[in-house]
View 1 (cartoon, rainbow, N blue to C red):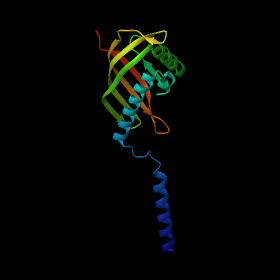
View 2: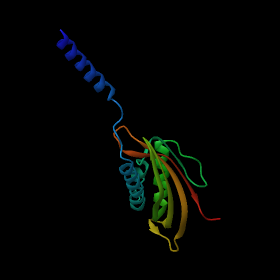
View 3: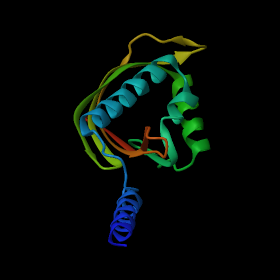
Length: 161
């Protein structure tokens, strides 16, 4: 009888341990920071390629973009429309350099420097004399259900006076 009670107690202890292990898996902050940096690199790639749909896809559902000198964009359709319009009018030769990336669980942020040039397109061709870009951004990132990181909020400003 004592042996049966011991076995039952062991099984119950094991079951309790397994049921309590439903917590979130351990995350690797450095891997998460690298994933956010990769997303920033992807933003540069799709912007240079003029791919507005891919740019908008960098945002999570419910993502918001707050561009300098313009109204905030709060819908997926708005993000796609903005990106197609902007990338349809300009050739982008900018780089986005992460200055600071931090992760806190399923949330992260990046402070970035944006530098380079953009050229207006006329009839599909760039016009001479590109415009210098010198700006900064703060991006807030959110881990998705599948573990991927996406932009949740993005705000940008120019360094020009």
